Amino acid sequence: MLQLVDVGKQSIEAYLNLVGQETIAELKELARPLAGLRLAHINATPYGGGVSELLRSIVPLEQNLGIRAEWRVISGDEKFFNVTKRFHNALQGQVCSFTKEEEETYLVYNIRNARLLEDEYDAIIIHDPQPAALRAFSKTFFPHKNINTKWIWRCHIDTSQPCPDYWRFLKDYITDYDAVIFTMANFVPPDFKHENIIFIPPAIDPLSPKNLPLSDDLAQNILDWIGIYPDELFITQVSRFDPWKDPFGVIDVYRLVQKEFPHIHLALVGSMALDDPEGWEIYEKIMAEDLKDPRIHVFTNLIGVSNIEVNAFQHLAQVVIQKSIREGFGLVVSESLWKGTPVVAGKTGGIPMQLQDGGGFLVTSVPECAERVIYLLSNPEEAKFIGQQGKEGVRKNFLITRLLRDELRCLLSLTG
Image (tube, rainbow, N blue to C red; front, side):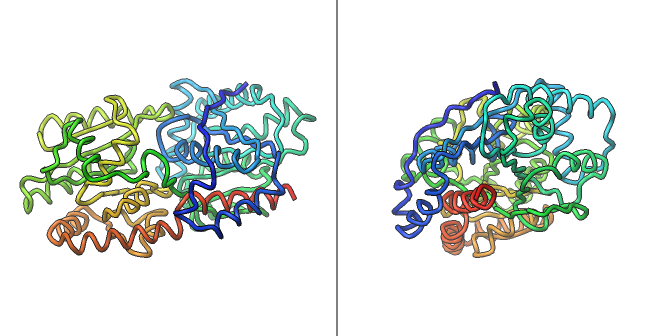
């Protein structure tokens, strides 16, 4: 069987003070016809990155509402995840050619994982490219078991300009799904036609360890423990070590900001994920920069930095940077805004959607990013006001209860 990920327990009532009784009542009403529904979420890794964080929050809430929801993870080795990382980059627009060896590797592991999908479900949500072929091979191995199962492919990345070779291959497997979910309409590849395309932006869980309220004193104690001291001025980027997040561009921004604020520190905070071998290579290069400058600090889960530490970084940073070149959504933007911290971010993907009600600035270059960071550092009262604007925008549009509502509606539309 596919690996089952343990999740905690959560009550939808716990969100009452954040979203109000009307929202809680709506969720219960939507979930009532789905009571007992057997639902599986399947992705590539139980930790690292936004998808695993979303699943850790939403699966317990689905269970609390009476749905028999599970979270399962496919298996693979470094060879497979190297191939799927190239899929990820190619689907986000990197120019490359799809080799026969990559095709064989991708299919071999999807076939192996499809054989492990033994349980019966009423609905299965497949997240991102890594397990996208499970639908086709499950039909082959278990033609009668899942005959009435509704299959949904959930794409969390920007596929608006995919590399043609990779997209042509993947599209054949996606077309057969009962529904396809993208974050926004702009992400749908130009040639993709499907009778049931749904748009659902991600969201943050305000009660997760990464987003629950921290006092200033507690946040300062947490960062003091790992070596960022309360009296230090610092900016931060929280993201996987991925070329699309442009961590070296962030270092260039920091060096420009340092000309105006000589004592500024930069904290690069990332999580090393099982399905991202490329991240280790970038991490080594970033560590080389870290050794050159005592005011650059690199923190990862390898040295015990987890969600509560990320919470403290986002809570206490003067400015959070998210200098993405290409982005599916960028949950860290909403996470930072939820703490009332202003954000300077790349004008790409789902980031503009998160800043439409205020909260920071959109930029397209290193000099522009540095200019906006300097402006916020120079005007702390305005920065505080901008951050609070962003928090209210997240409250309205990007909390987990809204995501749950959208998923329940999707399931209802497919299962009747």
